Amino acid sequence: MGETVGKLSVFFDEPFWVGVFERIEDGKLSVAKVTFGAEPKDYEVYDFVLKHYYNLQFSPAVEVAVAEKHINPKRMQREIKKQMSNTGIGTKSQQALKLQHEQYKTERKKKNREQKQAEEQRLFELRQQKKKEKHRGR
Image (cartoon, rainbow, N blue to C red; front, top):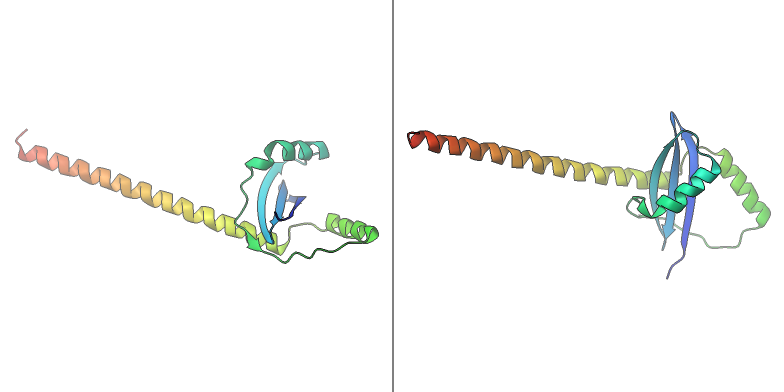
């Protein structure tokens, strides 16, 4: 069984606070985006993760290179500090979110098209029924 790495980035994306969950499983990155609204406190974010993590809709997986190596603790602290000061999300995450958005868009278009066709079919059958009633002399 492969290793799973998770990361949560919370940042201010005008006008709301947004959280981006990144999950790397077997060298594939999938992302979920959550809008918090007002600035969440640390305990609110922790509570959200505990209660809603398994209900998140993650994007389709995108290939990503994962380097497994031991990192010096001081270097790790510098990386964390750098990431904390950096606002926004990574390009791989953006690609995964864009892919998820496109997928939802195509699903929505397909559903709307089917509903429109069903409505047109219903109206056609209604017109045909009215024509038959006129011919019967009612």
